[in-house]
Each structure stands twice: as structure tokens, then as C-alpha cells.
Amino acid sequence: MKFKIARSNFLDSLKKVQNIVGSKGSMMILQNVLIEANDRQLFLTTTDLDISIRSVVPCEVEVEGSTTLPAKVLFNAVSKAAEGMIEVDVDGEDRAQITAGSALYKLSGMSVVDFPTLPQDQNSFEYVIPQMALRDMLRKTAYAASQDDTRKTLKGVLVSFRDGKVTMVATDGRRLALVEHEIELPENAQRDIILPTKVVAELQRSLSNDGDARITIEKSQVSFNLGDTRLYSKLLDEIYPNYRQVIPGELSERVSVDRELLLAALDRVSVMKKDESNSTKLTFNANELTVSSSVTEAGSARDIVPIKYDGPAIDIVFNPGFVMDPLRAIDEDEIIIELSNGHSPALIKCSVPFLYVMMPLRIS
Image (cartoon, rainbow, N blue to C red; front, side, top):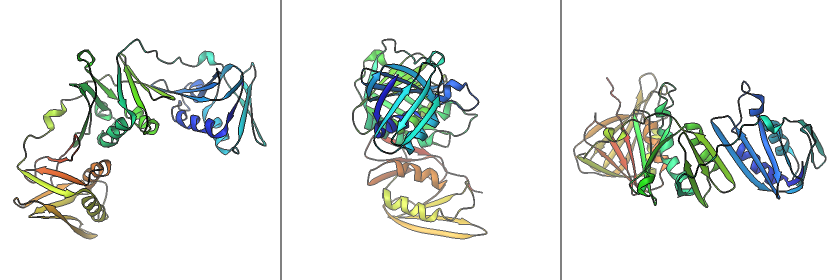
């Protein structure tokens, strides 16, 4: 195999796949990137057996062929190379000679025979959603997924294709983020899947502002066709809890507030914290929200935010990070906070199909 490729194109394609490689304790072949050169294209593939990713990039193919090379070493070599053309020449023993300007690298590869094959789509229905919309949905929900390894189901993100829309949900049991997007959806394509957090993170890196994401679901796997990149992942074989039962019904009080002003106030007040379990009190009065926090041995902080509200005074305590996360994830200028009292769940809503449930802290 022999090919030439622009260093910038080679590096961009390697960046797309280099995160999905096996750990040092896994099979050696999983630490390599599969490289296939044919028909003026270079295909790069990596896998850790749970997730696989494939990128295609144009190149000048002199001799078609394939091999596998150490992914991290190859990425580091190309990233440090001078801009220009890179020539890769691989012999019959999977030994690669890489010429990049004045630099010469020799890498020992492994045969493609032992590299895992990519999953095959079996004529399943293809869901189509703009990449920008999918990335936006992940941005608005993924942060709320559980980080607890003992709660495997909640470590994933639910994606539900039902009723002419795709609904995405993430929760850790103390908060819940939900967003919806309308798509064309036949009756026979109703489906729920749970995406592992690792593939969610990789999707957020891979999705662009242009083009569509074409999603194909098999029994236990999903693939995302993003144009020049294709991502495959096993699905979590779990049943997601009934999240709708934790969404409160009609709440008695409604508050309008500028998102950026509230976020800035929370950020200023959150400097007064002792550890990750810190709390911030929100005190709602007529047209005024007081954000405050105190630590016995350190002191206190307070800020005031104007709001649109004419209801009774309410004190409610939250983990400040749980309030700031959705405010960072949405773009709307104004948000709505709905609540009833200081000890029941509260909702954050905005002008798009998004809602966020947060449970208050109980402070003795």
C-alpha cells in the first residue's frame, strides 16, 4: 500500500478516530487504526469493541491496500509534522515508512486479518435529523446523566422516536433534562434506545453545523452516518425508568428571569462554597430574586436579580451547579422558573421544547 495525503487532511481524519481505541490492557490490535487506501480515498477506522468510528478522506493512492498502525503514535507523528504532503509506504509485512517533509518515521503495524469487522446495517429504517439539531439536543441534556457507575441505566441518554418527534432525556435521579425535536416518523418506526455516555461524548465531538445525521438502529446497536464520518455503538440493554412520573404537574408560581443575569449571579455567589455538596438559596420576592450562599467558617455571598413575579415569598435551596448547567446549555434570553414552594421540585422552561426538573436540597 502506498499513498500521499495532505498533512492537514490526514490530521483532521485521525483526530476524528483517535479517541476510540482500546486501552493498554486490551488486545494489541485494538490500539491500532485500520487504514484502507482505495479509489482515491483513505478510510481510517478504530474500535474498542463497544464503539467503532470510521472516517473517510481524499488522498492520492498509488498502490491500494490496507494495514493497521499504532493509533496514538501515528497521530502524534502527523500532528508534529510540517505542513505539506505526507507519503505513506507499507510493505507486505505491515511495516510503514512515513515521510513528512524532512522527518522520516518507521512504524511496525499488524495485519488487518485480526481487526474486528464493522457492524452491518440490515435494511433498518433510517431516522434523519439535522446534525446541528442533534448536537443541540445532546448539549441540552447530556450533562444531567448520572455519573454513578452503580446506576448503569441512568449513565446513558434516552433517545425516543415516537409521535412524530425525537425526545431526548437524561437524569441522575436528582434532576432531569428533556428536549424534543420534530421529525418525519412512520408508525412502524417507534423506538426507544439508550445511548452510553461514551458514544454521547464522541457524537458531540463529531457532529457539525451542516448536513444530516442518518441514524440506523439494529437490535443492540446504533449507527450514525455523518457524511465523512460514521459512528457505531452498542446500546445499553436496559429499560429506562418512567421519567414522566417525576415531571411535576401544574405548578402554582411562575417567574420570568433573564438567563444571563441569573447565571452570572449564581456564578458570583458560588465562590462561597466548602465542597462539591455546597448549596445556594434562591429567595423569590415580588420582582426580585436574591441568590445567596454561606459557609460557617468562611463567610457569605449574596446577589440580587430582577425578575417578573408577583406571588408569595418563597425560599428554595439548590445545588448551584444543577441550576447553572441548564442555563449554560440553552441560548434563550429569558427563562421561566415554575415552582410551588421551597420543598417541591421546580421546573426551568424556555421558548423551545425544553424542560428541566430540579429537586431542592433539604437543609437542616
